[in-house]
Length: 207
Image 1 (spheres, helix red, strand yellow):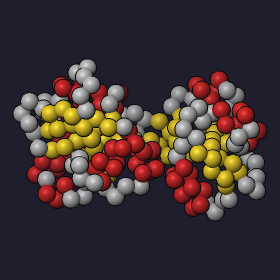
Image 2 (cartoon, one colour; image 1 turned 135 degrees about the horizontal axis):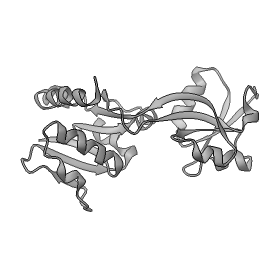
Image 3 (cartoon, helix red, strand yellow; image 1 turned 90 degrees about the horizontal axis):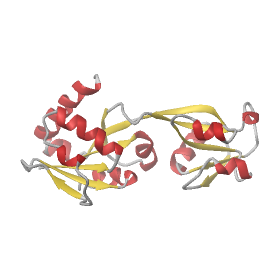
């Protein structure tokens, strides 16, 4: 049995569509249920519903053999696993954003509000920039509006929330999408199950 870690919601629905196309009896993923563990009728796949940020942990520790998580989650977690495939859905961008007046401004110590603390630290450290990282977990756009930060480092999809609050994208940093990841040991011990699935999934994402 192959164990799969998924985040419930749109991500699981999109994954279900791909799995079904690959011949997996994954219709159970579309059922309205409170169960956190689901098995396919043929007992070949078991799905764990976890928080999006927990997918890398379940895969790294081998509880799940494979999983699907956003690239932003993987960057932040820094987990020891294999990134196998860009699934090319749930696309967005990880950006630096702020007021238009911040364009080209070189402050001695920039204040950056973000929920992606580890990723932001690595980004600005790699650039040799001295910044103050302010951890936040909701309504990141509020930080520059209230003077808590100079800019934010966050996911941008349509940009509607930024525009509504007078903010703009100052820099696109990472392209984000859903990725298939695998546990390093499982990729060896369950290669006969994982690699054919990977090959099938590649057909449906255009690789």
